[in-house]
Image (tube, rainbow, N blue to C red; front, side, top):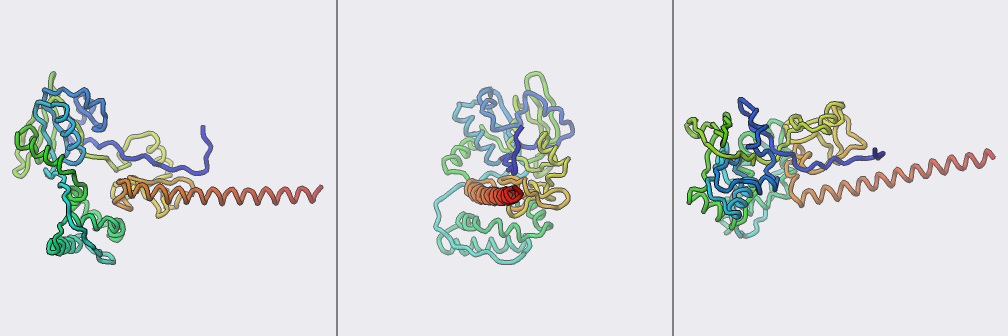
Length: 334
């Protein structure tokens, strides 16, 4: 057992959440890989059997590239609700941007962003420079949105924002395009409905967009590449469950992380700010939105470390003064 004065909850990214289906029993199968970042799972993959990657973001691209490098010879199926792939990095001219101040709607911000992209193109730049130029202001813009507008952003804009914000190197995009052109990577747009595991494979039933047509894929393995989960209410972990049950932490209303104060202190269920339990990183996504990349994490860690150090030094100084006062009173009594 450790006796400490302050604790920092630095959990990193949660594992992906299982897609909602009628029968969740398949998620206990050996043919299902919940953790796509498991190197062992990749090493054990049969290179001659088709597989399914759920999700079409950066995690899927990592898997597709890794399989290609290992000489994968079968079909890589990809199912995504919108079928969007991350955009490609390209050299571009810097573009200076000044976001609108005050609180606005998601619709207004989208119109403003499109106008800025037009201005950037007129100056010989493109949308990439505008998106990159927004990075120092993203958290401020997010915090200016009302809860309703944040929900509207998550429902309608988030998938498109992420494929433009989180881009890939041209070499990666070229390889993925080659896999698609040759038919080795098949991208399906739709939503998974159910699984039926057979002796040597698993049948994956889904409805394909845009006509909601029922389809079935037969693959050897299903890999969850939907990205890190962030809803702590659904994260079954003893530590998180205990913190929630005892009221020491509170999930944020958007299901993106935990309720966190500006100084990184976690908010308890009674609405009070903890004076000993802090956090940083993905747990702050509900408050900051952009909080998973290295620059943001580095700044959060430095700020929180300085704050905790000052608090510790202040606590030591107070303890010393109390001890000194008691010693003085004791000497006088003698």
